[in-house]
Image (cartoon, rainbow, N blue to C red):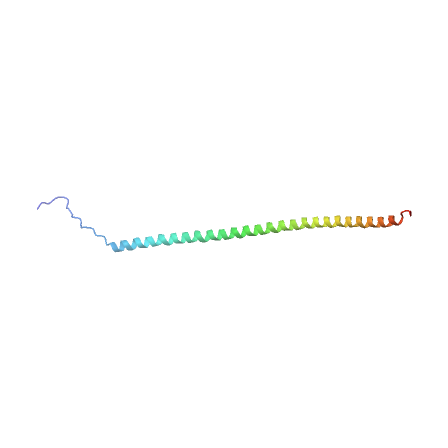
Length: 112
């Protein structure tokens, strides 16, 4: 038996208990999965809310624009209608005036 200044140790074979390691990996995977699920859910919900809000805004803007256009159209048609009624009244008075003139002149024709 030889003695040396430095003792030599034989390393014991290292055997890791795989069950705790698997549990840790599973827990870590669940933490990341929960985080990703929450991220996707938040993205989906917030995107859906934005789409709904923007659709409602667009619908309201279109409705308001349509109402404004309809009001302008109604005012224009009303103005044109009044113009036509005034023109019709003028023509009616002309016809009545002509009829009255013709009636008076027919009584003044020389007798032959």
